[in-house]
View 1 (cartoon, one colour):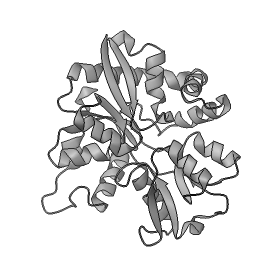
View 2: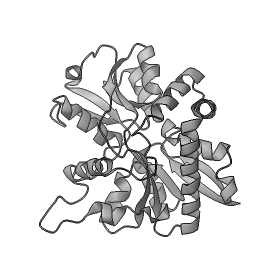
View 3: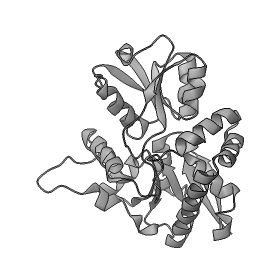
Length: 290
């Protein structure tokens, strides 16, 4: 049995296919045993992959794309989330997006993941960074929920089922993310053993297919993994199973990847378009492992 370490930000519901693959034996049938390493932030997972502390990373793809464009060894080998199952949750006294002007928005990273999704969402409601609000580096959605409860931030994007938990607790749900954005991907180093990565992705694809036909059983697995009430776990799994959230072939849509590239360029994390631009997708995304 080949032991592998999978880096993740937190025990988040975007990792339900991984939990299913572990619990239903899809990994074991391919000679793999996967142990999760929780890194707390998206850039923490990227750093762990770059340093060789994890074999595979399930995280925001921005760090790996920026690394590849800069000549590094990291690659995106599968897309796992094309429409982020997130909602903007604000503390109870804020009732509209306008109320967030001058506020602090919690995020898991200042360069990856929820920062870019939040920035796009707030811009759609007329709020520009840094003129109208500031980002607060809080960590995963679990840590952002603690910060919201403590009142040290004004709002944050919250992962399913924490959006429902917050709304039921009196916090304001300003609405879900509706745009495509490749929030979660499988990333590896070029030095990774190809056969192992391919077997892992095969197990993940089988698990994602099984999940869609067994939502209640998957919710029970997720509830046990996260100590979340079963009713919230079931709601979250139904949201995760909606068309357009998890790409069926584990290949992110051009729109979802394009949104990531645009965010990276606007943030200065990869070079802007020029007379002879680098194609970040061609350099950083390698679906030949699938």
